[in-house]
Length: 499
Image (cartoon, rainbow, N blue to C red; front, side):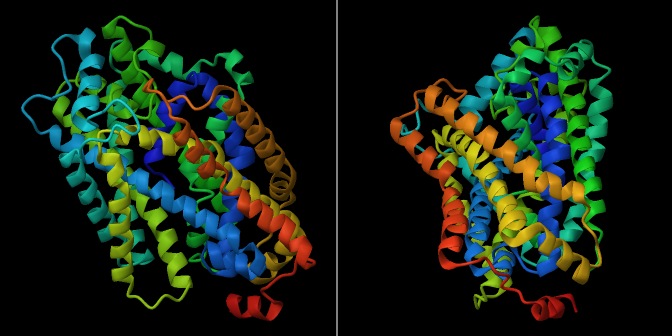
């Protein structure tokens, strides 16, 4: 469950939302939102032994839209998450030059030098969303390579992927420990750690901070994308999912918090040498990992070595995250009984992902990347998990699910989890969604690159963000119009599944 979001997404969101001010809602969301949803999705997969789409059909055919939206969201995020892998590959290759191209002999100009490399070499930024003039061909090559690596990881199936995880999920810990102990010994590291751990209590009243924390939990755990349902379907029949829902989120968040110490110690050192505060040392955009971190790493002894370690770590974490999302699509198509060889199917999916992701390798690509990340995370993801809670707990019935899970999986799901899933999670989701809806309508979408956002771009964002509402209408209005909700999977069917 550890992926690129733990090292790339968590630090920049934490930095963007005030450091320690982000940690309080983050830990709250972990216990009361992330872990319960994690349990729910694993349990659904383990009970019905199918992917997301067909698991919800087993509950009731009218719930199929829940699975479709989850698969669609997973595919969307998978397309732009692979761009992070491509950026990591690009920086990794540049680490082998005699001197790091983003470094500067003047320590006060490190951030400026790293920002210039990011804007000119890595992303080749234009002046706006529709100012698309050319491809960044080195980045096209890196994107192609990233999809080739993902293809090699997944085309043999889930068992092969589980072997890859041994490398992609363990090597980053070695590199994180290395960066952590080097980072905390740097001059000024304490300033960064102090910023990381000290909350600004005034920010806790900002619902955007709570929304960012909740969505980061969902991103890092993989909830809402269908991957956990797919993986749950491969669990042994009597797997202790309650234990998994405690241990895996705890380990996942520990990784994020540990990565925060490594990264913020380097940011503190960078701020110290630049003569600015930690809050001013970087802009906190999605490119933070590719601006502030390379600048900080260039200050270390043997900068090439530490930079290679860092971007190799991002690469492995990115691959770990990416083939999980692709497995969702594979499982969905296989469950549809499409007559195609799995290796060919994996190739088609990766080729389609590469072609779709080419927009992010243009000179306007980074703007579209941030746009997609914002609209998917702020609304779409939270809408998907809200619909899941409503469908399983209220329409299908938490008591029915508990009894069937106990009967066929021999495991009991305690009342605490259902209390969170039935009442606490939906109330929090509705409150955060409503607050962010009002805030976005009032202030609009503002990107971190200070370029104008055309009305058409905002309109597409709203369409993307609110598309899961189709599921809400479909799963609430249509079932009641057609009659009482009933379980599609009869007891005899579930019995055959369990056996």
